[in-house]
Amino acid sequence: MSVARLSTAGRKILADVPTRIAVLAGVGWLICYAILTVLSEDNPSRAKFVGDVLYLLPIAAGAIAAAVAARRLTGRHRALWRLLAIAYGAQLAGELIWTGYDYLTPSGPPDPSFADVCYLTASVVTVAAVLVGFGGGGRLRQLRGLLDTLLLIASAGAMGWQILIRPQLSDGMALSNLFTVAYPLLDIALICCLGIVGIGGHRQLPLSVRLVGYAGGLNAISDMLYTYQLVFSTYASGSWVDVAFEASATCSFVAAVVAIRFREPAARRRTFDRGFTVLPVLTATLASCTLVVVERVTSGTTSVLTLIIVGVLILAMLTRQYLFAADRASLATELRHAVQEQQRLAVTDGLTGLHNRRFLTERMAAEAGSAPDGHPVSLLVIDLDHFKTVNDTYGHPVGDVVLRESAGRIAAVCRTDDVVARYGGEEFVVFCPAADESQARALAERIRQSITGTPIVAGGTRIPVSASIGVATRPAGAADSLMTAADQALYRAKTTGRDRVAVAAAG
Image 1 (cartoon, rainbow, N blue to C red):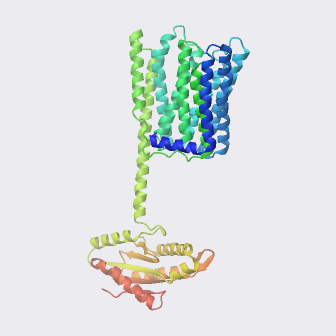
Image 2: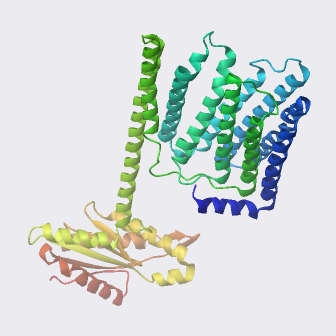
Image 3: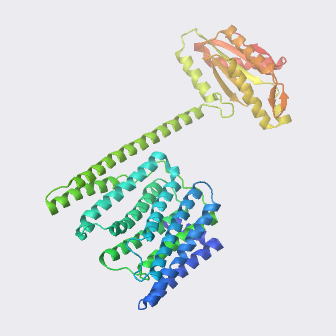
Protein backbone atom coordinates (compact mmCIF):
# COMPACT_ATOMS: atom_id res chain seq x y z
CA MET A 1 0.00 0.00 0.00
CA SER A 2 1.32 3.45 -0.87
CA VAL A 3 1.99 6.08 1.78
CA ALA A 4 -0.74 8.27 0.30
CA ARG A 5 -3.30 5.46 0.49
CA LEU A 6 -2.22 4.60 4.03
CA SER A 7 -2.60 8.20 5.13
CA THR A 8 -6.02 8.33 3.47
CA ALA A 9 -7.06 5.20 5.34
CA GLY A 10 -5.72 6.69 8.57
CA ARG A 11 -7.69 9.91 8.08
CA LYS A 12 -10.77 7.86 7.30
CA ILE A 13 -10.46 5.97 10.59
CA LEU A 14 -9.69 9.04 12.69
CA ALA A 15 -12.61 10.99 11.22
CA ASP A 16 -15.15 8.51 12.62
CA VAL A 17 -15.59 8.78 16.39
CA PRO A 18 -16.56 5.14 17.20
CA THR A 19 -13.74 3.81 15.01
CA ARG A 20 -11.27 6.23 16.58
CA ILE A 21 -12.35 5.06 20.04
CA ALA A 22 -11.90 1.42 18.97
CA VAL A 23 -8.38 2.11 17.66
CA LEU A 24 -7.33 4.05 20.76
CA ALA A 25 -8.81 1.38 23.02
CA GLY A 26 -6.92 -1.30 21.12
CA VAL A 27 -3.60 0.52 21.27
CA GLY A 28 -4.11 1.32 24.95
CA TRP A 29 -4.93 -2.30 25.71
CA LEU A 30 -1.78 -3.55 23.97
CA ILE A 31 0.36 -1.14 25.99
CA CYS A 32 -1.30 -2.21 29.23
CA TYR A 33 -0.98 -5.89 28.34
CA ALA A 34 2.71 -5.52 27.55
CA ILE A 35 3.27 -3.77 30.90
CA LEU A 36 1.35 -6.49 32.74
CA THR A 37 3.43 -9.13 30.96
CA VAL A 38 6.64 -7.48 32.20
CA LEU A 39 5.29 -7.17 35.75
CA SER A 40 4.24 -10.84 35.79
CA GLU A 41 7.52 -12.40 34.67
CA ASP A 42 8.50 -13.45 38.22
CA ASN A 43 4.99 -14.27 39.40
CA PRO A 44 3.56 -17.48 37.83
CA SER A 45 0.02 -17.05 39.19
CA ARG A 46 -0.18 -13.48 37.93
CA ALA A 47 1.29 -14.54 34.58
CA LYS A 48 -1.38 -17.25 34.31
CA PHE A 49 -4.14 -14.70 35.00
CA VAL A 50 -2.72 -12.28 32.43
CA GLY A 51 -2.13 -15.03 29.85
CA ASP A 52 -5.40 -16.92 30.38
CA VAL A 53 -8.07 -14.44 31.53
CA LEU A 54 -7.10 -10.94 30.46
CA TYR A 55 -5.84 -12.46 27.21
CA LEU A 56 -9.47 -13.28 26.28
CA LEU A 57 -10.73 -9.67 26.17
CA PRO A 58 -9.72 -8.58 22.61
CA ILE A 59 -10.55 -12.05 21.25
CA ALA A 60 -14.07 -11.84 22.71
CA ALA A 61 -14.43 -8.24 21.45
CA GLY A 62 -13.38 -9.31 17.96
CA ALA A 63 -15.84 -12.23 17.90
CA ILE A 64 -18.73 -9.97 19.01
CA ALA A 65 -17.83 -7.22 16.53
CA ALA A 66 -17.55 -9.77 13.69
CA ALA A 67 -21.00 -11.16 14.55
CA VAL A 68 -22.45 -7.62 14.44
CA ALA A 69 -20.77 -7.00 11.06
CA ALA A 70 -22.19 -10.27 9.72
CA ARG A 71 -25.71 -9.13 10.69
CA ARG A 72 -25.47 -5.61 9.30
CA LEU A 73 -23.58 -6.10 6.04
CA THR A 74 -24.85 -7.47 2.74
CA GLY A 75 -23.53 -9.41 -0.25
CA ARG A 76 -20.01 -10.80 -0.21
CA HIS A 77 -19.13 -8.68 2.81
CA ARG A 78 -21.84 -10.48 4.79
CA ALA A 79 -20.53 -13.90 3.68
CA LEU A 80 -16.97 -12.84 4.56
CA TRP A 81 -17.88 -11.63 8.05
CA ARG A 82 -20.16 -14.56 8.77
CA LEU A 83 -17.23 -16.88 8.24
CA LEU A 84 -14.90 -14.60 10.19
CA ALA A 85 -17.42 -14.53 13.06
CA ILE A 86 -17.34 -18.35 13.07
CA ALA A 87 -13.52 -18.31 12.97
CA TYR A 88 -13.21 -15.78 15.78
CA GLY A 89 -15.83 -17.68 17.79
CA ALA A 90 -13.88 -20.91 17.35
CA GLN A 91 -10.72 -19.10 18.44
CA LEU A 92 -12.52 -17.81 21.55
CA ALA A 93 -13.87 -21.29 22.32
CA GLY A 94 -10.34 -22.72 22.06
CA GLU A 95 -8.98 -20.08 24.41
CA LEU A 96 -11.76 -20.73 26.95
CA ILE A 97 -11.03 -24.46 26.84
CA TRP A 98 -7.30 -23.76 27.28
CA THR A 99 -8.05 -21.49 30.26
CA GLY A 100 -10.29 -24.15 31.82
CA TYR A 101 -7.55 -26.78 31.53
CA ASP A 102 -4.97 -24.37 32.90
CA TYR A 103 -7.00 -23.53 35.99
CA LEU A 104 -8.87 -26.77 36.67
CA THR A 105 -6.21 -29.43 36.02
CA PRO A 106 -2.85 -29.61 37.81
CA SER A 107 -0.94 -30.60 34.70
CA GLY A 108 -2.56 -28.03 32.38
CA PRO A 109 -3.90 -28.74 28.89
CA PRO A 110 -3.10 -32.11 27.28
CA ASP A 111 -1.10 -32.10 24.08
CA PRO A 112 -3.08 -32.10 21.84
CA SER A 113 -6.39 -30.97 23.34
CA PHE A 114 -9.81 -30.02 22.04
CA ALA A 115 -8.57 -26.44 22.17
CA ASP A 116 -6.19 -27.31 19.31
CA VAL A 117 -9.16 -28.51 17.25
CA CYS A 118 -10.85 -25.12 17.80
CA TYR A 119 -7.68 -23.24 16.84
CA LEU A 120 -7.28 -25.22 13.63
CA THR A 121 -10.97 -24.74 12.82
CA ALA A 122 -10.51 -21.00 13.21
CA SER A 123 -7.54 -21.03 10.83
CA VAL A 124 -9.31 -23.14 8.18
CA VAL A 125 -12.50 -21.04 8.30
CA THR A 126 -10.47 -17.82 8.05
CA VAL A 127 -8.86 -19.08 4.83
CA ALA A 128 -12.32 -20.01 3.51
CA ALA A 129 -13.56 -16.53 4.45
CA VAL A 130 -10.87 -14.90 2.33
CA LEU A 131 -11.71 -17.09 -0.68
CA VAL A 132 -15.43 -16.32 -0.31
CA GLY A 133 -14.80 -12.63 0.21
CA PHE A 134 -12.86 -12.44 -3.06
CA GLY A 135 -15.13 -14.74 -5.04
CA GLY A 136 -15.83 -11.94 -7.50
CA GLY A 137 -12.37 -12.39 -9.00
CA GLY A 138 -13.62 -14.98 -11.49
CA ARG A 139 -13.92 -18.75 -11.12
CA LEU A 140 -10.78 -19.68 -13.05
CA ARG A 141 -8.74 -17.02 -11.31
CA GLN A 142 -10.07 -18.02 -7.90
CA LEU A 143 -9.34 -21.69 -8.56
CA ARG A 144 -5.84 -20.85 -9.76
CA GLY A 145 -5.29 -18.69 -6.69
CA LEU A 146 -6.33 -21.59 -4.48
CA LEU A 147 -4.03 -23.96 -6.35
CA ASP A 148 -1.15 -21.46 -6.09
CA THR A 149 -1.81 -21.31 -2.36
CA LEU A 150 -1.80 -25.09 -2.04
CA LEU A 151 1.40 -25.30 -4.08
CA LEU A 152 3.17 -22.85 -1.81
CA ILE A 153 1.90 -24.57 1.33
CA ALA A 154 2.76 -28.07 0.09
CA SER A 155 6.20 -26.94 -1.08
CA ALA A 156 7.02 -25.07 2.12
CA GLY A 157 5.63 -27.91 4.21
CA ALA A 158 7.60 -30.56 2.33
CA MET A 159 10.87 -28.64 2.57
CA GLY A 160 10.30 -27.78 6.22
CA TRP A 161 9.53 -31.42 7.00
CA GLN A 162 12.58 -32.78 5.20
CA ILE A 163 15.10 -30.20 6.42
CA LEU A 164 13.89 -29.00 9.82
CA ILE A 165 11.29 -31.26 11.38
CA ARG A 166 12.16 -34.80 10.34
CA PRO A 167 15.67 -34.70 11.85
CA GLN A 168 14.10 -33.75 15.21
CA LEU A 169 11.71 -36.71 15.20
CA SER A 170 13.94 -39.73 15.56
CA ASP A 171 11.35 -41.37 17.83
CA GLY A 172 8.50 -41.01 15.35
CA MET A 173 5.79 -38.50 14.58
CA ALA A 174 3.32 -37.83 17.41
CA LEU A 175 -0.17 -36.38 16.93
CA SER A 176 0.89 -33.26 18.83
CA ASN A 177 3.63 -32.67 16.27
CA LEU A 178 1.06 -32.68 13.49
CA PHE A 179 -0.96 -29.98 15.25
CA THR A 180 2.19 -27.97 15.89
CA VAL A 181 3.18 -28.05 12.21
CA ALA A 182 -0.38 -27.32 11.04
CA TYR A 183 -0.53 -23.88 12.70
CA PRO A 184 2.17 -22.12 10.64
CA LEU A 185 1.10 -23.92 7.45
CA LEU A 186 -2.46 -22.62 7.78
CA ASP A 187 -1.11 -19.16 8.49
CA ILE A 188 0.93 -19.38 5.30
CA ALA A 189 -2.28 -20.43 3.51
CA LEU A 190 -4.06 -17.31 4.75
CA ILE A 191 -1.24 -15.01 3.69
CA CYS A 192 -1.01 -16.71 0.28
CA CYS A 193 -4.77 -16.40 -0.27
CA LEU A 194 -4.67 -12.70 0.61
CA GLY A 195 -1.71 -12.17 -1.69
CA ILE A 196 -2.68 -14.31 -4.67
CA VAL A 197 -6.49 -14.14 -4.71
CA GLY A 198 -6.80 -10.73 -3.07
CA ILE A 199 -3.91 -8.36 -3.79
CA GLY A 200 -2.87 -10.10 -7.02
CA GLY A 201 -6.40 -10.24 -8.44
CA HIS A 202 -7.91 -6.92 -7.33
CA ARG A 203 -7.10 -3.23 -7.83
CA GLN A 204 -7.84 -2.11 -4.29
CA LEU A 205 -8.87 -4.00 -1.18
CA PRO A 206 -11.40 -2.63 1.31
CA LEU A 207 -9.72 -1.24 4.43
CA SER A 208 -11.44 -3.79 6.67
CA VAL A 209 -10.13 -6.67 4.56
CA ARG A 210 -6.60 -5.21 4.61
CA LEU A 211 -6.84 -5.12 8.41
CA VAL A 212 -7.92 -8.76 8.40
CA GLY A 213 -4.79 -9.45 6.36
CA TYR A 214 -2.60 -7.59 8.84
CA ALA A 215 -4.19 -9.60 11.66
CA GLY A 216 -3.44 -12.80 9.76
CA GLY A 217 0.18 -11.76 9.29
CA LEU A 218 0.58 -10.97 12.98
CA ASN A 219 -1.05 -14.28 13.86
CA ALA A 220 1.32 -16.11 11.51
CA ILE A 221 4.37 -14.56 13.19
CA SER A 222 2.93 -15.42 16.61
CA ASP A 223 2.26 -19.02 15.58
CA MET A 224 5.81 -19.41 14.29
CA LEU A 225 7.19 -18.12 17.60
CA TYR A 226 4.78 -20.41 19.47
CA THR A 227 5.83 -23.40 17.35
CA TYR A 228 9.51 -22.61 17.91
CA GLN A 229 8.97 -22.51 21.67
CA LEU A 230 7.10 -25.82 21.65
CA VAL A 231 9.75 -27.61 19.57
CA PHE A 232 12.93 -26.16 21.05
CA SER A 233 11.88 -24.76 24.43
CA THR A 234 8.75 -24.53 26.59
CA TYR A 235 5.64 -22.39 26.29
CA ALA A 236 3.71 -20.94 29.22
CA SER A 237 0.74 -18.58 29.37
CA GLY A 238 1.73 -14.97 29.93
CA SER A 239 4.86 -15.05 27.77
CA TRP A 240 5.83 -12.38 25.26
CA VAL A 241 4.41 -14.50 22.43
CA ASP A 242 0.97 -13.71 23.83
CA VAL A 243 1.55 -10.00 23.21
CA ALA A 244 1.87 -10.74 19.49
CA PHE A 245 -1.33 -12.84 19.60
CA GLU A 246 -3.07 -9.94 21.36
CA ALA A 247 -1.95 -7.56 18.61
CA SER A 248 -3.51 -9.90 16.03
CA ALA A 249 -6.79 -10.11 17.97
CA THR A 250 -6.89 -6.32 18.41
CA CYS A 251 -6.36 -5.80 14.67
CA SER A 252 -9.22 -8.23 13.95
CA PHE A 253 -11.48 -6.28 16.30
CA VAL A 254 -10.64 -2.96 14.60
CA ALA A 255 -11.24 -4.57 11.19
CA ALA A 256 -14.76 -5.58 12.24
CA VAL A 257 -15.49 -2.08 13.57
CA VAL A 258 -14.30 -0.54 10.29
CA ALA A 259 -16.51 -2.96 8.33
CA ILE A 260 -19.52 -1.98 10.45
CA ARG A 261 -18.93 1.76 10.29
CA PHE A 262 -17.95 2.33 6.66
CA ARG A 263 -19.93 -0.21 4.56
CA GLU A 264 -17.13 -0.35 2.00
CA PRO A 265 -17.60 -1.31 -1.66
CA ALA A 266 -16.44 -4.74 -2.77
CA ALA A 267 -12.89 -5.19 -4.02
CA ARG A 268 -12.55 -4.33 -7.70
CA ARG A 269 -11.17 -7.06 -9.94
CA ARG A 270 -8.05 -6.43 -11.99
CA THR A 271 -8.34 -6.90 -15.74
CA PHE A 272 -4.86 -8.44 -15.68
CA ASP A 273 -4.17 -9.92 -12.26
CA ARG A 274 -0.60 -9.86 -11.01
CA GLY A 275 -1.12 -13.39 -9.78
CA PHE A 276 2.44 -14.13 -8.52
CA THR A 277 2.82 -16.24 -11.65
CA VAL A 278 6.44 -17.31 -11.06
CA LEU A 279 6.58 -17.76 -7.28
CA PRO A 280 4.38 -20.89 -6.92
CA VAL A 281 6.10 -22.67 -9.79
CA LEU A 282 9.61 -21.80 -8.58
CA THR A 283 8.76 -22.81 -5.02
CA ALA A 284 7.31 -26.15 -6.13
CA THR A 285 10.32 -26.82 -8.37
CA LEU A 286 12.73 -25.96 -5.56
CA ALA A 287 10.79 -28.17 -3.15
CA SER A 288 10.87 -31.13 -5.55
CA CYS A 289 14.63 -30.85 -6.05
CA THR A 290 15.24 -30.32 -2.33
CA LEU A 291 13.25 -33.41 -1.33
CA VAL A 292 15.16 -35.66 -3.70
CA VAL A 293 18.63 -34.20 -3.06
CA VAL A 294 18.36 -34.10 0.75
CA GLU A 295 17.05 -37.65 0.94
CA ARG A 296 19.74 -38.95 -1.43
CA VAL A 297 22.45 -37.22 0.62
CA THR A 298 21.14 -38.37 4.00
CA SER A 299 20.02 -41.91 3.18
CA GLY A 300 21.52 -42.74 -0.21
CA THR A 301 18.09 -43.61 -1.70
CA THR A 302 14.88 -41.94 -2.75
CA SER A 303 11.79 -43.33 -1.04
CA VAL A 304 8.50 -44.07 -2.77
CA LEU A 305 6.79 -41.46 -0.59
CA THR A 306 9.21 -38.76 -1.77
CA LEU A 307 8.62 -39.74 -5.40
CA ILE A 308 4.86 -39.55 -4.85
CA ILE A 309 5.16 -36.09 -3.27
CA VAL A 310 7.34 -34.86 -6.14
CA GLY A 311 4.87 -36.34 -8.66
CA VAL A 312 1.96 -34.58 -6.98
CA LEU A 313 3.85 -31.28 -7.01
CA ILE A 314 4.66 -31.63 -10.70
CA LEU A 315 1.03 -32.53 -11.51
CA ALA A 316 -0.14 -29.52 -9.50
CA MET A 317 2.28 -27.27 -11.40
CA LEU A 318 0.98 -28.53 -14.75
CA THR A 319 -2.62 -28.07 -13.63
CA ARG A 320 -1.80 -24.61 -12.40
CA GLN A 321 -0.25 -23.64 -15.73
CA TYR A 322 -3.30 -25.00 -17.55
CA LEU A 323 -5.58 -22.85 -15.35
CA PHE A 324 -3.33 -19.85 -15.97
CA ALA A 325 -3.57 -20.38 -19.74
CA ALA A 326 -7.35 -20.92 -19.49
CA ASP A 327 -7.71 -17.71 -17.48
CA ARG A 328 -5.74 -15.77 -20.08
CA ALA A 329 -7.79 -17.34 -22.89
CA SER A 330 -11.00 -16.38 -21.08
CA LEU A 331 -9.70 -12.85 -20.62
CA ALA A 332 -8.75 -12.67 -24.32
CA THR A 333 -12.30 -13.75 -25.23
CA GLU A 334 -13.76 -11.08 -22.96
CA LEU A 335 -11.53 -8.44 -24.51
CA ARG A 336 -12.41 -9.59 -28.03
CA HIS A 337 -16.12 -9.37 -27.25
CA ALA A 338 -15.56 -5.95 -25.69
CA VAL A 339 -13.77 -4.75 -28.83
CA GLN A 340 -16.55 -6.15 -31.03
CA GLU A 341 -19.14 -4.40 -28.87
CA GLN A 342 -17.22 -1.12 -29.14
CA GLN A 343 -17.05 -1.54 -32.90
CA ARG A 344 -20.80 -2.20 -32.99
CA LEU A 345 -21.54 0.82 -30.83
CA ALA A 346 -19.35 2.98 -33.07
CA VAL A 347 -21.71 2.38 -36.01
CA THR A 348 -25.00 2.04 -34.10
CA ASP A 349 -27.48 4.67 -32.97
CA GLY A 350 -27.87 4.32 -29.23
CA LEU A 351 -31.57 5.19 -29.07
CA THR A 352 -33.06 3.20 -31.96
CA GLY A 353 -30.50 0.43 -32.49
CA LEU A 354 -30.30 1.27 -36.20
CA HIS A 355 -27.05 2.04 -38.00
CA ASN A 356 -25.78 5.57 -37.54
CA ARG A 357 -24.79 8.23 -40.05
CA ARG A 358 -21.15 7.17 -40.08
CA PHE A 359 -21.97 3.60 -41.09
CA LEU A 360 -24.39 4.81 -43.77
CA THR A 361 -21.79 7.12 -45.31
CA GLU A 362 -19.11 4.39 -45.36
CA ARG A 363 -21.50 1.85 -46.87
CA MET A 364 -22.63 4.24 -49.62
CA ALA A 365 -19.02 5.07 -50.47
CA ALA A 366 -18.12 1.38 -50.63
CA GLU A 367 -21.09 0.61 -52.85
CA ALA A 368 -20.27 3.48 -55.20
CA GLY A 369 -16.76 2.14 -55.65
CA SER A 370 -17.70 -1.51 -56.16
CA ALA A 371 -21.02 -1.58 -58.04
CA PRO A 372 -20.98 -2.01 -61.87
CA ASP A 373 -21.49 1.12 -63.98
CA GLY A 374 -25.15 1.79 -64.65
CA HIS A 375 -26.27 -0.35 -61.70
CA PRO A 376 -29.14 1.55 -60.02
CA VAL A 377 -28.94 2.50 -56.33
CA SER A 378 -31.67 4.30 -54.40
CA LEU A 379 -31.94 6.37 -51.27
CA LEU A 380 -34.97 7.11 -49.10
CA VAL A 381 -34.94 10.05 -46.69
CA ILE A 382 -37.74 9.76 -44.10
CA ASP A 383 -38.82 12.61 -41.83
CA LEU A 384 -41.47 12.22 -39.11
CA ASP A 385 -44.07 14.96 -39.54
CA HIS A 386 -44.56 17.50 -36.73
CA PHE A 387 -42.25 15.59 -34.40
CA LYS A 388 -41.39 18.78 -32.47
CA THR A 389 -45.06 19.01 -31.51
CA VAL A 390 -44.86 15.48 -30.05
CA ASN A 391 -41.89 16.47 -27.89
CA ASP A 392 -43.49 19.74 -26.80
CA THR A 393 -46.85 18.12 -26.00
CA TYR A 394 -45.86 14.83 -24.41
CA GLY A 395 -42.23 15.32 -23.41
CA HIS A 396 -38.93 13.94 -24.67
CA PRO A 397 -39.30 10.46 -23.07
CA VAL A 398 -42.48 9.93 -25.10
CA GLY A 399 -40.72 11.36 -28.14
CA ASP A 400 -37.97 8.75 -27.69
CA VAL A 401 -40.61 6.00 -27.66
CA VAL A 402 -42.05 7.36 -30.91
CA LEU A 403 -38.59 7.39 -32.50
CA ARG A 404 -37.85 3.80 -31.42
CA GLU A 405 -41.22 2.51 -32.60
CA SER A 406 -40.93 4.32 -35.93
CA ALA A 407 -37.42 2.93 -36.42
CA GLY A 408 -38.72 -0.59 -35.77
CA ARG A 409 -41.54 -0.16 -38.28
CA ILE A 410 -39.13 1.13 -40.93
CA ALA A 411 -36.69 -1.74 -40.43
CA ALA A 412 -39.51 -4.32 -40.45
CA VAL A 413 -40.59 -3.58 -44.03
CA CYS A 414 -37.11 -3.11 -45.54
CA ARG A 415 -35.25 -5.82 -47.38
CA THR A 416 -32.23 -7.75 -46.09
CA ASP A 417 -29.77 -5.85 -48.27
CA ASP A 418 -31.12 -2.42 -47.40
CA VAL A 419 -29.15 -0.24 -44.98
CA VAL A 420 -31.47 1.46 -42.47
CA ALA A 421 -29.92 4.31 -40.46
CA ARG A 422 -30.95 7.14 -38.20
CA TYR A 423 -29.50 10.22 -39.85
CA GLY A 424 -30.21 12.64 -37.03
CA GLY A 425 -33.12 13.85 -34.92
CA GLU A 426 -36.38 12.51 -36.39
CA GLU A 427 -34.81 11.81 -39.77
CA PHE A 428 -34.10 8.27 -41.06
CA VAL A 429 -32.40 7.10 -44.25
CA VAL A 430 -32.72 3.83 -46.13
CA PHE A 431 -30.00 3.03 -48.67
CA CYS A 432 -31.06 0.44 -51.25
CA PRO A 433 -28.00 -0.81 -53.16
CA ALA A 434 -30.06 -2.98 -55.54
CA ALA A 435 -33.31 -1.10 -56.19
CA ASP A 436 -34.51 0.85 -59.23
CA GLU A 437 -36.90 3.77 -59.02
CA SER A 438 -40.12 1.74 -59.04
CA GLN A 439 -38.84 -0.61 -56.34
CA ALA A 440 -37.67 2.32 -54.21
CA ARG A 441 -41.02 4.10 -54.61
CA ALA A 442 -42.91 0.92 -53.58
CA LEU A 443 -40.66 0.46 -50.53
CA ALA A 444 -41.17 4.10 -49.53
CA GLU A 445 -44.94 3.70 -49.74
CA ARG A 446 -44.82 0.55 -47.57
CA ILE A 447 -42.75 2.44 -44.99
CA ARG A 448 -45.17 5.41 -44.99
CA GLN A 449 -48.17 3.14 -44.52
CA SER A 450 -46.41 1.19 -41.77
CA ILE A 451 -45.74 4.40 -39.82
CA THR A 452 -49.09 6.05 -40.52
CA GLY A 453 -51.36 3.01 -40.31
CA THR A 454 -51.43 2.51 -36.52
CA PRO A 455 -51.02 5.16 -33.81
CA ILE A 456 -48.02 4.67 -31.52
CA VAL A 457 -48.86 4.01 -27.88
CA ALA A 458 -46.50 5.89 -25.56
CA GLY A 459 -47.03 6.95 -21.97
CA GLY A 460 -50.55 5.53 -22.06
CA THR A 461 -51.46 7.78 -25.01
CA ARG A 462 -52.20 6.82 -28.61
CA ILE A 463 -50.19 9.20 -30.77
CA PRO A 464 -50.89 9.38 -34.52
CA VAL A 465 -47.66 9.68 -36.50
CA SER A 466 -47.07 10.29 -40.17
CA ALA A 467 -43.97 10.61 -42.33
CA SER A 468 -42.83 12.42 -45.44
CA ILE A 469 -40.41 10.51 -47.66
CA GLY A 470 -38.11 11.66 -50.42
CA VAL A 471 -36.82 9.07 -52.91
CA ALA A 472 -33.90 9.36 -55.32
CA THR A 473 -32.41 6.80 -57.72
CA ARG A 474 -29.10 7.15 -59.54
CA PRO A 475 -26.59 4.93 -61.31
CA ALA A 476 -23.93 3.63 -58.91
CA GLY A 477 -21.29 5.88 -60.42
CA ALA A 478 -23.37 8.95 -59.59
CA ALA A 479 -24.26 7.93 -56.04
CA ASP A 480 -22.66 11.10 -54.64
CA SER A 481 -25.72 13.11 -55.72
CA LEU A 482 -28.21 10.73 -54.07
CA MET A 483 -28.49 12.57 -50.76
CA THR A 484 -28.99 15.97 -52.37
CA ALA A 485 -31.67 14.64 -54.73
CA ALA A 486 -33.48 12.73 -51.96
CA ASP A 487 -33.41 15.80 -49.69
CA GLN A 488 -34.97 17.90 -52.45
CA ALA A 489 -37.67 15.28 -52.95
CA LEU A 490 -38.35 15.24 -49.19
CA TYR A 491 -38.71 19.02 -49.18
CA ARG A 492 -41.27 18.76 -51.98
CA ALA A 493 -43.20 16.07 -50.05
CA LYS A 494 -43.36 18.29 -46.96
CA THR A 495 -44.33 21.48 -48.82
CA THR A 496 -47.12 19.74 -50.72
CA GLY A 497 -48.94 18.53 -47.63
CA ARG A 498 -46.75 15.96 -45.77
CA ASP A 499 -47.60 12.26 -45.21
CA ARG A 500 -46.61 11.41 -48.74
CA VAL A 501 -43.82 10.09 -50.98
CA ALA A 502 -42.05 12.32 -53.49
CA VAL A 503 -39.59 11.01 -56.09
CA ALA A 504 -36.67 13.02 -57.41
CA ALA A 505 -36.34 13.44 -61.14
CA ALA A 506 -33.90 11.09 -62.86
CA GLY A 507 -30.40 12.51 -62.86
